Image (cartoon, rainbow, N blue to C red):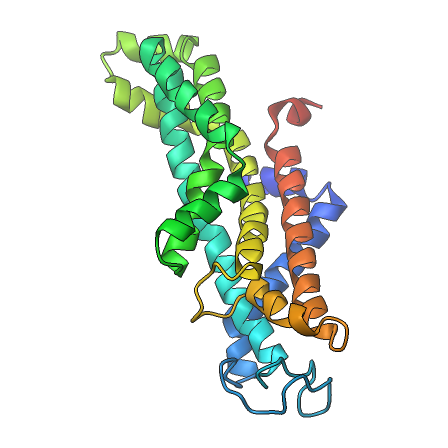
Length: 278
């Protein structure tokens, strides 16, 4: 409990990170509890197309007559879910590759890092488009594609952390005690290597949301689900006459990504051992 209190004490020193955390919690709360407070189905065509904001429709309607506020609340669930799951998948894959390369070294390290370099040479967004084009667009395909293109930076970071830890005294003591390599890697080195990985993983959530928005804007997302990027794509056809259709979900993406980046900076301040010593 004292460790958690100490972490919070270091985190709250960054006032911008605290503000970002407050707004991020509000966004998550809206995504979870919003449909209970505003029970309009975002898929129902209940009004005139391209209707401006009014008492009945606080944010207006889209080109199909669907309530934009309901779509904004429902889209928050989809966008945040894709961002979180894709970031988690990229983190797990990147840590697995980086830990194996950094701990074992030798030819395996060379092979895995050349594989990582191969993925880094291909523009991530283009690779995601190719993956989705090969398979049918769906929430699973989009999430998997984003995770596949996002793991290389995590792998490089995890490799560096494992290489820095594998020859430390505590690791040598574990080997002398007869612990297996798997046990040393998972129970001893991984907890010490996680802080910077957690920071990068939190920032990957923002990157995943932006990538999903770009894919949805191009019509490469799940057509049966409304996300913020999908709403921007729908509104681009009437951007001059009904700018609010794209501006409102665009502002939601901007605020969410900004809050996640601020929280990521706060995590870096709280988990960075050099800053802790200061």
